[in-house]
Length: 320
Image 1: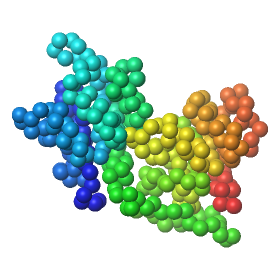
Image 2: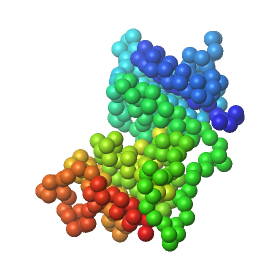
Image 3: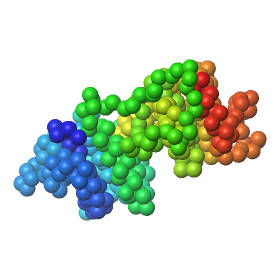
């Protein structure tokens, strides 16, 4: 890590998510350093106007993590007024200031919370609904924190240091390399984001299929030297989710569509592959779980499918 990187500011409500914010801060400080990670507790000096203190803290920060619990949108003060309706509420001031500064604002969902809708937020916080959120689960806390650190590492790293391995040059002798013969990456290959380019393969899938089918496929494709775009890593937290999807759909020229009952019921997956079809781009369906004929969308019924067990042939098609 560079020593002169900007900081990370953690915004949270003490009475709702102090424990979560403390665990997040401890983990991030252990990796990035104590001076890099700030929150209201350790950055607001006694006797200092809180809005001025927030301005100072955000001036030296590049990322704001907005920790959002179940009752974050509906929290009330002693008078029963919803806190977010108070223009001087410190959480509202922190996030609104960061959004106005065009900082990277990452909503971090805890306690099983979901993103609030624009109707639940004051106007100055409405842009928060367009920021891609990151979920932290107690059951997978360690793995989730590691992924959050990976994302922040990329965001905070100097631009010239962001150099991910490019796909190996294609030659006439390119052949399928068995996964056991491929060189082992320094980090789990499924956790590395790829730089978006026309050569990048867009992977459309259902989250329900990730562990059993999609993640192993991502690893295998990258071991063959392919760049792969997946929303979990291709959309960096804090960026506009819809804009990032649209950019990937425009840029990528080939799509691997992971077919399963859940993906065929997903409006998002349908939008993605139909966007490719409208642009006359290549869509390669891969059957991960069998789908009943009557449940298969009409516009996929005339396309050749590959079974997941025969994915080697699909990869060989991509190499050719």
